[in-house]
Image (cartoon, rainbow, N blue to C red):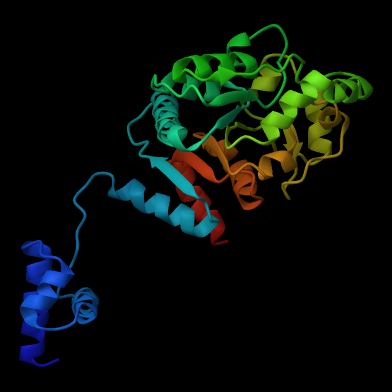
Length: 316
């Protein structure tokens, strides 16, 4: 490149980056085509004449988000910087991210599916009040016994619908039964089947990813016994989503526990256009990896530590 060409590139770069002119305006001033201006601006960056620095504390997590989206084909990744945050603060911030994203989607969706659990409770609590009377909120699974009602799908649906002024549906059935035939009968009940069908056809779903061996809410509230957990280990279960237990291939394990669930299935979840989950615990990273890779999740809220672990795992 001779001195004249370099000075021409510098002039164009200054007009664009310092003076704020459009490429069309620069083309008119210089007397060249807009496409040539675009090419010369690209040359300026490639040759190091122009270096762009993003001066923001969010640059770090923004890069992780873009890397996750590229590596795993996610529609959206949201990553928080967990440095100097307590576990309680991490849970709160990730829930706020998830709630903010859900709020941003309300004008473009007509139905929301809600699973159950503590993480989803935090998201619902963080959702901003709004008016979206045309939106229907649908439970994706039955209730988890008489305790911890605050994290049951019906209660979460009611609370979310109240906050967005939408309509709520209810699934009057337990999440899990001891008898497979009874579970089949309930799933085929006209009223329950109607709600399950609605749940399988929502536009947006909020689900949890569970680790049955570490911090399991299902075990905590008595829905899983020690015997059940041993059976899950024998069946090589990796994790669960909407209380459907799956293996390292993302496939639903053929066992008595899964057969007794009253809720939408893994295949139902895979057909939902937008499925969001929050993972703020490194112990659930392998579960998240399989769920994302097998198209169970496409909107992912997480921490920088989980994101880095996922990116490292993607290159192995």
